[in-house]
Length: 196
Image (cartoon, one colour):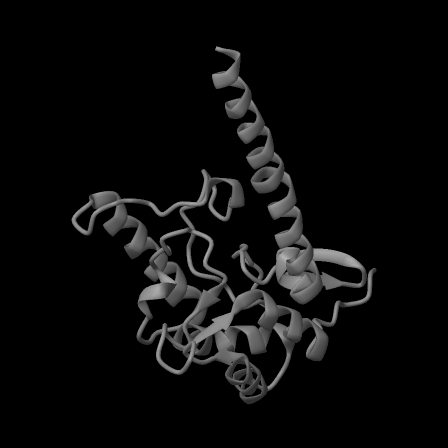
């Protein structure tokens, strides 16, 4: 019996050390050496403080910022620990009401015009950090007014942040909301009125 158990225990110990410890350490070391930013979560740092990740959407509600697409992740949205879509079907009344309410809010805030689909629908993960260039353009006048900047300059900044298709064919053109908002803060800071 011992002659049957010993090889099994030795094999289990060997593969545990190889595949459970050595291989993950090797891959982590290679990732940290070759792609340190991506291996650490593509974190955005401003003045030594982490303000978000380029890969995980977060909510920006102030008028001076580019707003992301809606999120169904977690109870209040944008919860990275509860990443998911709404799983509501196209005929669901709750989904129809949420989309209608979102469209009304966008029109009240950003004016009339064609509302892109990503402005009122959630992504599959609920944490998509990107919006369409069309949704960004729809928000340009509001952002410019809130920052006291010429709308043309804001549109140019948004256009500069458009990322093309991967390898020229995969996906759609997109704008990373966090990166664009950080650039807005750097180029056109909101001037606060002096305290009374």
